[in-house]
Image (cartoon, rainbow, N blue to C red; front, side, top):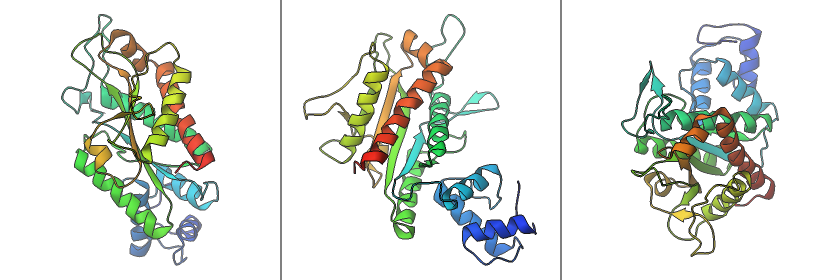
Length: 278
C-alpha cells in the first residue's frame, strides 16, 4: 500500500480512523500533517507518505498489538552505513583479512538493530530505529532526536523510553577481545538494564571473555560517552566484541553471529518488559 497527498478512498478512511483524525477519505494537508507527526514519533522518515513501514507501524500501534504498559525502545545503530558501495564513516572498520573480508562497524550495527526490531515487533514491543538511514548522522543529532521522542511520548501517553546504542569495539592491537556493556558513571537506573544484558551475553557466549567492572557491584563498564550522558532517559551502549580481533571479527561478519548478538538484546528487552525493571 502507498498512500500520499491526493489519494482517496476506503484505504484513506482506514488510515484516518487509525490516526484518530477527521474521516473523509481524502488525503489532504491535514492527513499529511498527521502522518508526518506520527512518523516523527516513531523515528521514521517524515515525508508524509504512507508506505509499508509507516503503515505497519500505524496498524501495530493502533491495532492493540503493542503492549501499552511497556516501554519505547529507542535503538541507535552507531555510525554510518554503506551508500553506493561507499562506507560513510572514516575508520570504524576492521583490518582487511587474508580472505578478503572486512567488517564496517556501521553496517554491522544496522544489521543487528534490524534483527532486534523484527523480533520485538512480533511480540508487540515498541521499538524505534533512531537512524533509519545509511547516512552518518552526528552524535548531537542522535541524542537530540532521542530526546525529542522522549518528550513527545511524555506529552502524548507517558510511556517510558529506554535508549540502546549498538556497537562493535575496536583497538590498535589485535589481541584485544571480549564483550562489554556501558552506562554513565555512577549508580543509575541504567545499571539494572545493563546487568541483564551482560547476563544474557554471558549465557549466550560462555567461552568468550566478558569485559566488566565489578567494583560497584555490577558488571557494566562506566564511561561518559556522549550518547549516554546527553539523553534524558535510561541508556546503555553495547560493545559487541572487537572487530579488530581476527576471530571475533569473523563472528561479527557471520549471519549466525549477528543473529546471536541480536538475540541477547531481544532477551534483555523481554526481561525488562516482563519485570518492569525501571
